[in-house]
Length: 106
Image (cartoon, rainbow, N blue to C red):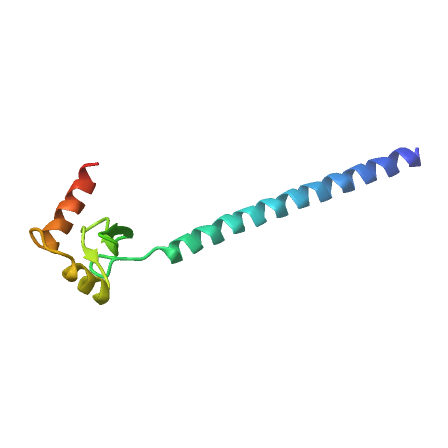
């Protein structure tokens, strides 16, 4: 009879540790998902005007950032100089505006 109780105790003990391991694994998974979410949020660049998300785009070889909320376009000073030095056909601003406007309709 004591052998049966020993086996039962061992079985209950194994079940307890399996349950605890499963809980720990779930906690670790949730923590990893949370860390990945925080990393992605930290990597997101926010618009200085409206705090929307900036998405990168390339226009005539120059990297621009465009806000998904207010449609503001942000670029570095040297990038603006590069755009202004491009050969003109209706001006760089109108070329950029046409490029952005057609990207919206796609």
